[in-house]
Image (cartoon, rainbow, N blue to C red; front, side):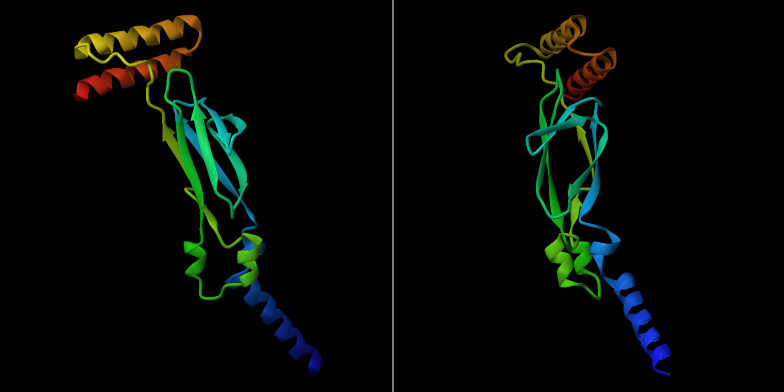
Length: 168
């Protein structure tokens, strides 16, 4: 008679643990983050360490802050911050203190990072708008001819330049 009662208690404890709040067992202490850029192919550094070119996926600890820097010829460097947030975990009815200590109670926000790179072709201030736009396109053409830009990046860059001056 004791064995079925002990088995039921053990099974209930096991089921309660795995179904309610043990984030360390269900999520783990690492999270996969997706980093994309427009245009693709930007060199990415996370906390100063080069990790590859966009787009890519990377596993990061959930409980740390990360700075993502993207660099690409012809475009301004952009930065973003990934922050740990426990908002989703804090909403749970049952939580385990161990999850906070092991770093599983947080999620990195945002989980998917999409960064639009802006053209950086020099400052041509003091010129009229048409001359300024033309000078930037000529600079983009020179970068294409020298091999600093791919044809796809050149098309994207020129489209962004024209769009920028069309809106003004």
